[in-house]
Image 1 (cartoon, protein in one colour):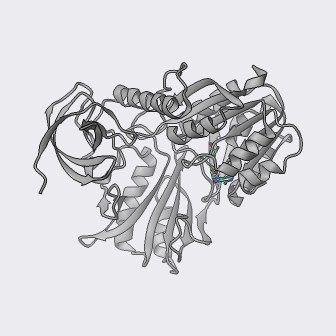
Image 2: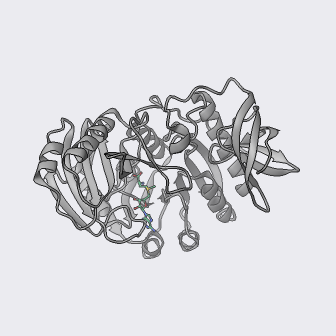
Image 3: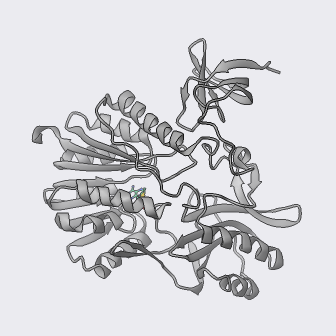
Length: 430
Ligand SMILES: C[S@@+](CC[C@H](N)C(=O)[O-])C[C@H]1O[C@@H](n2cnc3c(N)ncnc32)[C@H](O)[C@@H]1O
């Protein structure tokens, strides 16, 4: 067994760990904070880095606080809960700054992070595995990098209605068990909660549906039958069991609907601020394209900035929502196409003045980057939840585009994730 060693934590890692250096090689120490002196034990050695377990903190820093959640270490969902909120925000600003510098060579100004006014109880959705533990049904999380189930009796970042329903549903599972239950998905907007249970091929008892539908905030229940092991959280068959099919989200004067498969940002209040910034930074354009458009909320926010707005999204249900959302908000000049962003972008023949992209964490594919270079819009608004892929993608566009503005948003408080909006302009147009 490795013996314990004492290290000084020098900087933040992108996953919220502290990083120490031994013989110039980084050692990742989850739970440690830059500035601290820690006793650690190496648990993994790789050619370019090491991973360690934090044994104890010998010298702490004022940024440390006692984490509210007793499951913080095992659950891993809130890797920064032991860090004071203002220091969490500084960490995110620093991670973004370093990524833009390292991969895109950017040393310019970054706006201060837009803080979350409610760093707890903000999450409007959860997707949790369900297991029987000591004879009782529980929903929880998998411990980081493992398939070890960690039952969570109370989650502090879930929206209050969502959390109430989650706790009550697990009790209902005890009374009316669902054979082959895999995952519980909940979405909460405006005090209304949608429940989606992902199961094997099984019929859900009427007693379970009745009990869940009687929970005060529940307005919609779905079952998703999943028999494959794909990463898609839902299976191919979706059965509507009770109430509304769609959820409604109000974003200032805009109203949007979403079906269970449609994506929406996890933090409604901060999403609103992000979309307002997108609207502010989008120049007046003849044609705007929004790729990775989800239910079309950004297109609706920039509705006054384009004569024609085209959205592209790969999930058919989200496209159905987006087109209906455009209609319901009186926007005849906005429509949405279903398909792969790169493929559909290539098929657009008119001149694109502004391109808005909001891809998943993996960022833009090489085919998307090629399609962007070919279309050469004058302005790109890149919204990203991953500073590394954002910066690497910007680097690949750097022959044509320069960074004009960057603003991070804290959408995922208590976690190391940071959302960023970045305005890029075509170099020759400056
Ligand atoms: C980060 S979400 C952004 C959604 C939307 N902009 C919003 O703010 O709600 C990314 C979206 O891209 C979609 N998507 C993922 N890969 C795609 C692809 N290759 N082509 C088109 N859309 C894709 C996902 O279904 C998801 O709706």
